[in-house]
Length: 474
Image 1 (cartoon, rainbow, N blue to C red):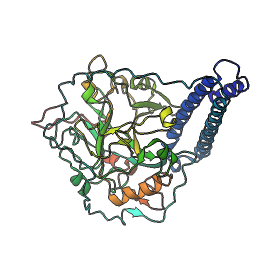
Image 2: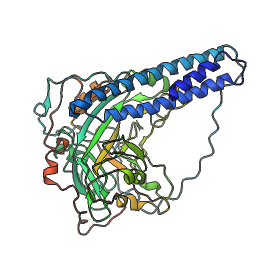
Image 3: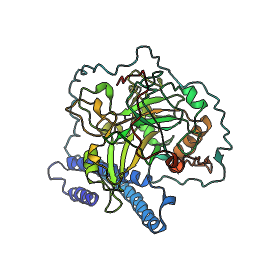
Image 4: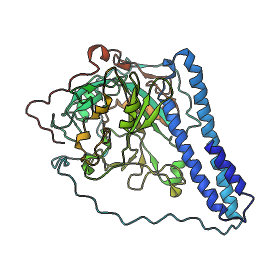
């Protein structure tokens, strides 16, 4: 409805050029359409979280129709944006005496606030640069893959290639091999997934050489971790699973040529943190996490963690998601705050309203979204739930979920990583379930969809004791 109203208003203005500021109205309509396109892109992301092969037959047809309608809607938006651009060109060519609105000048930068005492970047750390050397992982690639599977279809009318898979929850540890390398027990409690041997002593080489993976296939020995979700009465809420969704515009996309952004692939050994920034804890930060509940009936709803959990019923699925930054400086695999070598993209008039990376970080890597799924159980008081990092926030900002963040330490098998980037991303394919896009993919291991893990691990384990002789550094 919003789309139709916007288009109607624009074309109603077109013949009446004598009225006030038709060019400004057209340009504002262009902005409104762009916002609608972003909203629809989020809806299409939600569709991407669904694995159609796991849907009941009575639901599959409706799901397929809704996905098709979402694709059609996005195509209509693109056509509308094209039409509005032509209208703006016509208004300008017709000599309409309305100057192009200039962006408001940016205010002088405020001085950075004083950093809080903890945590501090390790003074003895060395930041590696470029990609690390290849490591022989000892994996039998042929045995861990299939070669005669389904070839993934195109992502069109979407403009990005996509690669998705599922991870089971792994170990609970007071470790953070990115922030506190070589210092087990120095962190708040983390829920790890991916490499089951990841701990405070992990390095790129150790991750590549050992460890089963909870992420569908052992070809991905990367380590992922987030603060553990706590019940408030001494237990941990273990996720049912994590979904991971990588995406990026393909090589050769005209957008890269027009805005100076350079498409790139993951270098060996890259690691970073995203979400809440502990190094800026003393200042308020706009939360970057998204929270949603699917109650099973009546449709899902979003909001703050407190708002969502207050309405999420027993049996309802509570989702927490974060998206990684995508712009890399092209040199560093880490940085003292574990974030400065990466940054977010931007989208404005200068970039042609197409996502672009700043000149300081010109390389666009595939971004990935992590979504954790938790299920509310009978008798639980979800008003007491919080993430293990939440107590780190100053009291005036503190609320459940405010500090949610995630860490990633890449340790992919080289051939697997290159294959899915070459096909799924660069050929703009829609790959799911560890499908590499070319008819091959990763064989599901025993941790796929939590089938084995739930048989050996409780849903609400007691909060583990911190290792003896260790202290919480942040």
